Length: 340
Image (cartoon, rainbow, N blue to C red; front, top):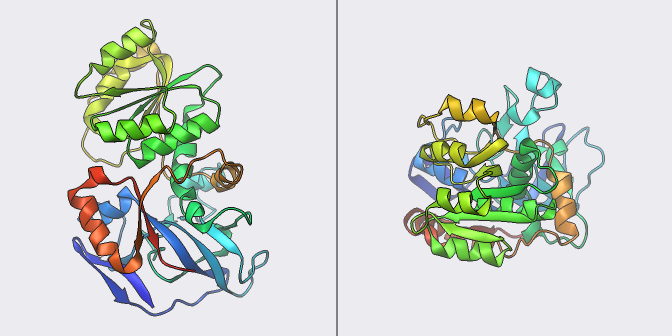
């Protein structure tokens, strides 16, 4: 069968691989659609410290159950599913306190074990989530990025009337925008330096946008909030140098959600954190957010089609990677049609 495999940094191809076997407790998923994520690009670039090569990447995908391993109940061949990529041990401290997404022995599908850019993939049965009949497999392949948004917003603990500022209008910024709307946040500002991305944010319902190259974001926030500052700030730009600005424009008692894996140190002015009693929270992957997001998609409260800019066959995936490497401004979410 065919798969997109990364053998080493910048060394990738569509290749023939053996069909996996469903071990006890596992299922095989015949993949229909899979999305390319920024973290897939980090693996290709050699910037992911967790991956071991060769690796079939892809952690955003949906498909149909093709086989069921020994001891699996509650799911059957033919069921339509999407896949939570977080495989946790269930025993370490984070797992014991309900934070399996930071399990100390975690495996991520598409990083530590083979993922969805192949025709058939084996996964733990517990990670397969059955889909409502009217939810398309193309939309379901995008559940995972929306769970990233759901997780960071949950970590930030919004309250009624909170304003939200999102740094970055790439895919994650746009999913945070839509998820925040679905959760009832009404005043949402998005800032970026690319006008095309800001236009998409406005199309998807952002209250306003600021272009960081053309406007003074701090001054704009000062005017907008009459000096109070922003109670919620989500860092979907993932640029460490922006943290000092976030600290300055956060309101007293504000919450800042950080998503980036960039190892570059950030300047943190402790005075800003303490005098305002700010809360800085990291957010990694998702903590059991799949049912919530599936429900929001099924009820039409998330615009998945507004997120997709390209649909590409698996055979053409190397060309899509080249585009994302050299012309990323042309793309939002690139969806790979693998076929069920």
